[in-house]
Image (tube, rainbow, N blue to C red):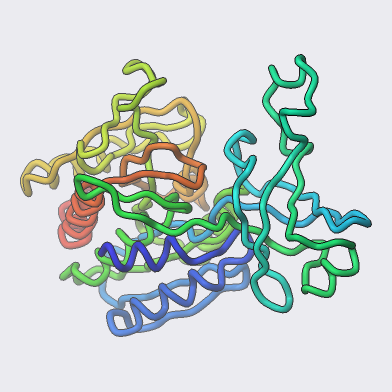
Length: 346
């Protein structure tokens, strides 16, 4: 699983440009499903044929990123943000611009502190005051390198292993969810119909989940995601009790109820599976962000939905951190859920 995750995390694909991730999913699942197709919006749908019920198992493919907005006469590039960036994490990062002639590397810069006035030093630098430097001397040189307005940009970061079976990298939100989905499809001995869906454009509005759920109209859905861990400095325990190495996370509700409010029957089903199979788990009630489940569960007349997540530190940065132990617990829970789906009473 670690190598699948490495492949997914090191691949590049901002919202709307997920082709590299689709290719990996197709390669990994080709021998385990009956059909793989891509829909109009770009969601990849791997179908494992079976009987009733039908289960939509999903994780989003896109990562937060940037896009070229303008190029000045001296060759400096301005950008817009795709997804929920905290601007301070961008400054002084190395980036990859995915141009028409291949990858071009650059760095995100800003006015240096040496030349800032005292009041400027006290303020966080905003993304609108940053630029990308690829070493070019002119706008023409940038364009000659294949960089144009609309070129997608990602962080130049590779997954690295840390102590205690933990890893760090970019886009673990939600490439670890994809890894969990892939592993569960491979391992599950289920006679239900399974739709394994890699969704597009989650980070910019849950778009792919909305269209794919409408098209598939499954009996239920399980979303594989990440959850904000709260076990490090700067976060009070009352803000998040989710812990790295605390096991898989089952969402009770997120976004203060504005996103998913999981049906009690779905929660009890997953909790019973975890307890019967001795799978480590923790429960999440969130006030902040939401997931693809927010739109899946209100599709058509409603689709019962659950979210199984991997605890993640430093989310929406280039140094997201997870424990592979938690990812394995998530795989076990999702796998068993697919195998015991007939025990669910909705």
